[in-house]
Each structure stands twice: as structure tokens, then as C-alpha cells.
Length: 163
Figure 1 (cartoon, rainbow, N blue to C red):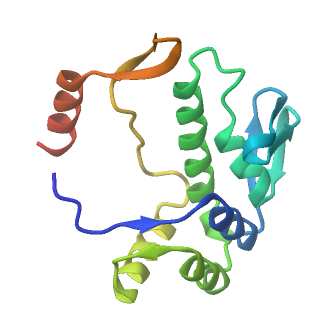
Figure 2: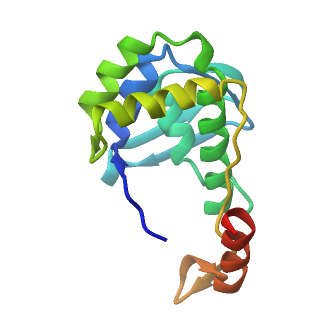
């Protein structure tokens, strides 16, 4: 499947965009505490529904320790965060967000294409879109945690979605 356009943003840039939105309201399902000094990563989120700053939202998206299914739980949380951002899009200050997003994102899209995409995203406020995870299962190999992709089920998913 050809990929014609890309947009790349790092975690610091994503946090700045979320801050430009005024944060995002999320339900944190349990206390999230994790420290990794090698990554300079210190996650400390309390359970409950709350308005997350950009940095807190990135911490929510990066956390995986307490999910029974590890990375699959984190993927689900990342999809939930994306849905929350889009669902809350109706109240955003789009010019302010666009300035920050443009400065923080690398892309091969024209400014016109970016504006068109932003308009489509604004039209999705309320969460009218779907997310999918490539089929597979978590497992261990050589003492390391892996996700084992199911190529046949992925082909079936792509065929179902795109014909």
C-alpha cells in the first residue's frame, strides 16, 4: 500500500501541541507510576478523570507497566488519547494550534493539504472515526517481550477496510 504523505512529530512537539489545545480530558484507569532515569522519564499520574497537560498526556501514552497485555494495553491507551483529542476538537483555538503544530511537525504535505486535513479532523469532533491494531499476540523470545504479528489476519483486516 503506497504511503503518499507523512507527518512526523516527536514527544516534546506533541506535548506542545496538546498544551496549545489547553490540554486534554482523559480518564486515567489506575495510578501510573514509572521511572526510567536512562530516558529521563518520570511518570506519576493519579487514577481518575482529569485534564492532562501535554507532558502528562505523553506520559499517559507512553505508560505500559500495569497493563496485563503490556504494549497492547499501551496501544489501546494511545488510541483512546487520539479519540479524546479529536472528540474535544470543537473547542480548540485552531490558528494557535496550527502555528504550534506547523513548527513542531515534519511533513511532505503542502500547506493546503494540511489545512484540508485539519478541516477534516475538526469535522470529526465527537469521535466519528475508527482505530485499529494490527492483529497478533504478545509473547516472549530470548527473554524479551515481543509482539508477534499475524500476517494473514492483517491481510484480512486490510481487505475488509480497503477492499
